[in-house]
Image (cartoon, rainbow, N blue to C red; front, side, top):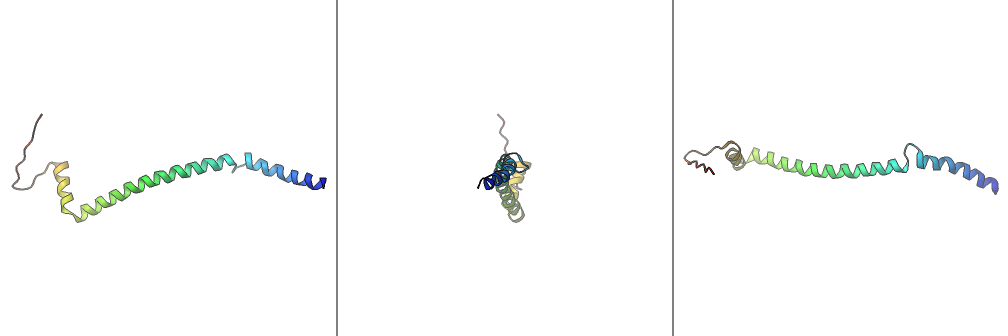
Amino acid sequence: MKILICVLLLILGPLQYRLWYGQNNLDAVQRLATQVTEQTTQNQVLQVRNDQLEREVYDLKHGDTVIEARARTQLGMIQQGEIFYQVVD
């Protein structure tokens, strides 16, 4: 019985060493889990942004109102027959 206990302890020693100090120890696994969580959160934020950009591209390809709104706000364009008023503070 004592021999069996000694053999089990000899086997358990290296396993414990690998668990605490080896290449894939508990600390490394915890750091990787944290990185995965952070990356998942970042991916979700980027996915929302990509969805918004995709909708915007679709609107630009298929809708004249979006193009007209962009021309008005970004380029200061007006339609023919409209009068442009500029208010200065």
